[in-house]
Length: 110
Length: 114
Image 1 (cartoon, each protein chain N blue to C red):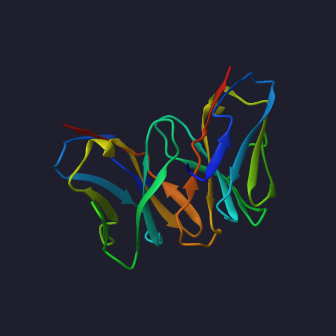
Image 2: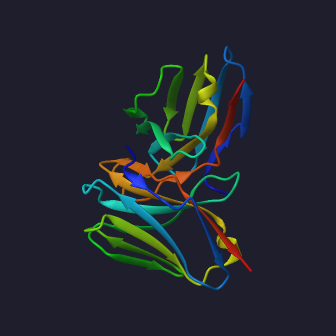
Image 3: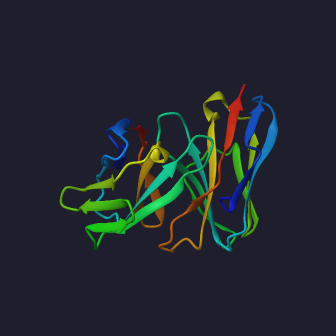
């Protein structure tokens, strides 16, 4: 049973527009959430994180929102750029383990 | 340059072979991890080492045998693997197991079992 779910396997967005990637989780004990980005033939790269005591964290073009009551988090990228095209993984920390989602492939087209 | 280096990048082996995957980090981290990524599945944690001691074995079959001789190096010894073990194997490190810092990943070893 997957504790972290990314229900959209892919997303296509025009350059300059907003990309919204979603992630749902089931375990209310998760205290820390992260987003990783992965290019083909490379390992995941850390992008942004948020603690469960916050509801928003912003870093440049990337903003993560956390809705604890809905057990939902989202990553907003604005404006989207072609170089953002990659697979995005959501991860949640339970005790000292990271639980990953299956990823969403984002394609940003000109 | 990720700071976490995995070799080899690709490995093809038969079911009766014995091989090892290597991971090296020069980030001064004390926690190291092995993950398995199969097609269309989330990353699965396999092993965790903290200060060279194994702290987590996520019900991994004994045909996978990890070794952590020091905080900078992590190995995954493979023997008599099965076709379903074909996957991308990722190594990661973190300052320490209890740190709030993110894990840094290597680029992985793509393993194919014939």
